[in-house]
Length: 251
Ligand code: PGA
Image 1 (cartoon, rainbow, N blue to C red):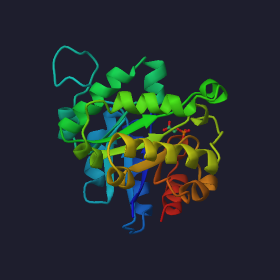
Image 2 (image 1 turned 45 degrees about the vertical axis):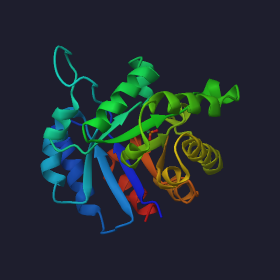
Image 3 (image 1 turned 90 degrees about the vertical axis):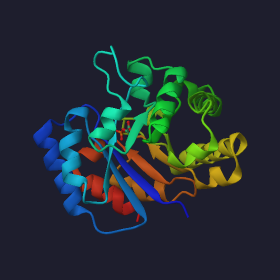
Image 4 (image 1 turned 90 degrees about the horizontal axis):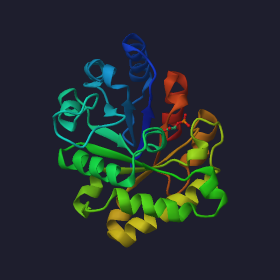
């Protein structure tokens, strides 16, 4: 049985005091449950403080981005070591906003994925097609290219520290969710691709999250699909009641 994982991607939202407020509400609203892991991914500026609030709780900490170099003249960037030093356990890599707004290629994402895993963090690796790609009927091809590119040179041993998040770009922040059937189809495809690239047991153990307008009113249906093992939540994770309801939907 794969454990469900619900992660909140706060994106570029919430200053320090609002971060403290949100994470305190999440922490206080959680009921004990061993079947679900909860991860919050605040902006860099709130990581350290949020860590002090969650470190004795079941809530885990993740970063929204990371650079692949260890240190040096990379103005504005943050390394894996820096993330670990403030209590981060996870890093999100390959989010469609990074791919499109910040021009991150599969090659860059691959370097980041490798740095995250080599340096002992866990990875939330995002993939997803645009509306144009879906309408052209090339969704699976796009996902396959992103996965092969992002995981190039990464061996099976590291897969246990990887979550793949399937996030159709057309569903992110748009209020349009993939139907549970559309999402399940691609999750199943990703699992079979991992079996082909690695092994049946690696594919069976892999946690695959869905992301893209996950809300309390669609979470139960999405999370009840066979190959959907969790959610990467954007907009709805900024409201503690909504995020807690999504977490409950995974129980
Ligand atoms: P959304 O974002 O829930 O606001 O659609 C999801 C994401 O970008 O991870």
